Image (cartoon, rainbow, N blue to C red; front, side, top):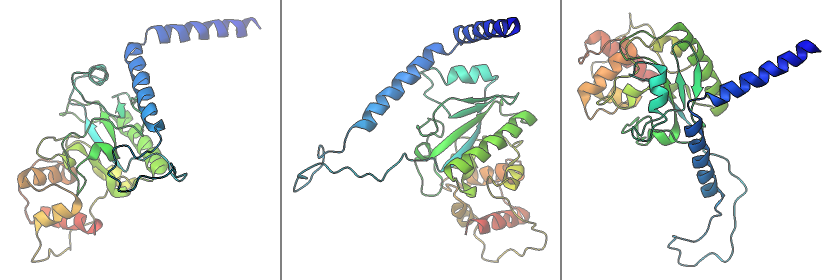
Length: 272
């Protein structure tokens, strides 16, 4: 009985200490306030207001067949900052105007910073295929990494667990696990070439190419068209080629030799 009492006292003290020393108490309150504001918007019943209807509807008729919009992509980033603390602070300041749904620290700690159904500001000006508003249809995951170092085993292990949960929960297609550098090749280069895209593809998160040893390259093969079929924005063709290299060949070369074109050809076939 005495041990139970002491345990309860210790638990209360620990809980109080943890809550009172949370450096994000103030921004957590702002988060909850903003969610309440959005909830009020969702509760507004459909009306004729703002509609240019020739004949106004005689009575309201709300459908009963609906749910929340769900994410359809996962975009992976590196933070390009020096510590997890720096990134958490950046995402809880107004001035930077950036955020992500998840941040994974080097020790594998996963910080869930935003409800998956809410729109984070992580993709910026970007494009994948015909989708020009990636933020509205994606989940952003940031990995604590300055952009020039390998990712840690705990990071990748917990990233894979997280991706498995997200894929199952939202039925995200295999091909829709991509990097920030893929959707914004002229602006971004993350995650860096150390990122294990092949391992992710083996686990069902993104595509990878098959053996190209005995693959003949079609004589009329068009590299830019192939990049476009995969999803890359080829307006800046050099940047698109570099993004492809980063993702599939762990370098940032700006040209495609015949071996590279075979890889590109094999990847393209996955998307057709």
